[in-house]
Image (cartoon, rainbow, N blue to C red; front, side):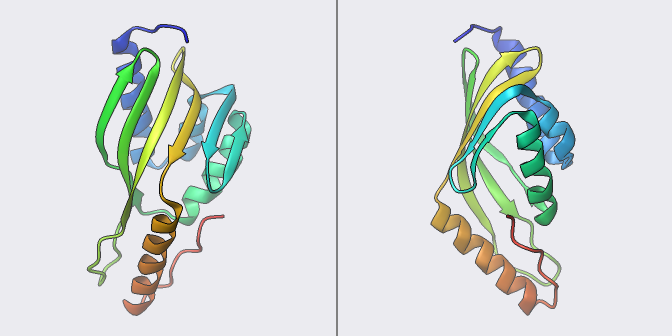
Length: 149
């Protein structure tokens, strides 16, 4: 693995986080190399920036209203490992907490781009959280969003 300046990796990680907070998933996909790999253990392996974009944009549009607060992160050379929450923000009238933990591994390729992302989480927990969110949304009088595909 190539060695990168820690400050550069930290700055790019902060940009990665900011793009997720902005919910601009096209810009988020742009931060990956053309031949990047995204490993999503439940939904598949996406090879290349455009495959990542084709998956992430409609997936995240289907669940708009999510946030991804980072609890901690570690940088080792060009690798970033962080622990975050995938949070379904409650709709008006909902009182529950709807979140599940994710460990993410990123590998930095230089020039402001990542060449690997791997998301590791408990799929059964994620499904249960989404199910509770959808049930509570209906009970609160909302049309629930379609589940991600």
